[in-house]
Image (tube, rainbow, N blue to C red; front, side, top):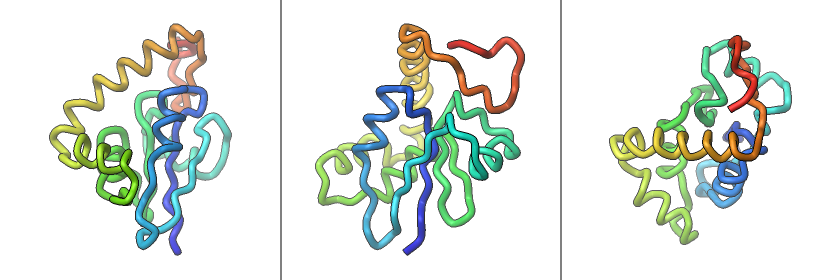
Length: 133
């Protein structure tokens, strides 16, 4: 069974709740949740690809990285239909177009939440002046 990695900021309550609710079909593989705040090989790969983890989660499936709206779209397609949350998730993000429209709005809400909670950015790309939300 292949492992599918979902890399996200575990200090974001909304992201953490979403990622813990999502289930993928057993026939697809095992979903492994990865804390983006912990250094490791996968975070090095994400950084080398130039993906800003503060602006989107990353799904790694079959050696391919899916970022932001594409990651949430793929999760919707891989979701187990036996779980109510996944059916809703597929209805909402099963369309690539709708995912690309909604994801920036969700990201803005997430960034506002993290600003209110006074969380620091992960800043995996090492951008100057990007310590806080």
